[in-house]
Length: 93
Image (tube, rainbow, N blue to C red; front, side, top):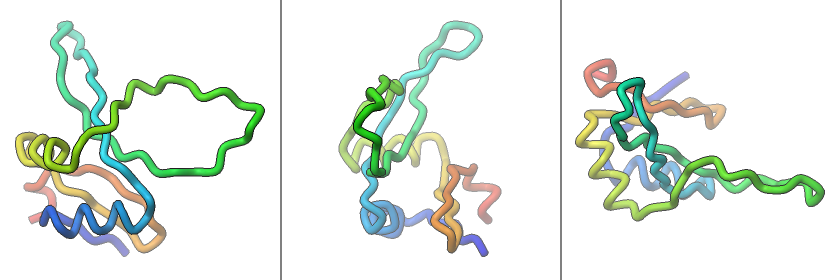
């Protein structure tokens, strides 16, 4: 079962309840134009023998992340198994 979250407080509560933090990655499209790609980073147990790789994510404030979410007209779709996806808001309505 899935739910779509659009209210900022609901999104922030869902993520922080699961020990997640907001992040933004800067990616380039095929024309070389840079855009913001929203990410969520969740703390997971890492094996000590595996080195951390740069995944291009930069942690950011909730206000910056939520402002970009609104600018891109996205919502957070979550499931009871804690899976999530960013979806277009018009799909949510």
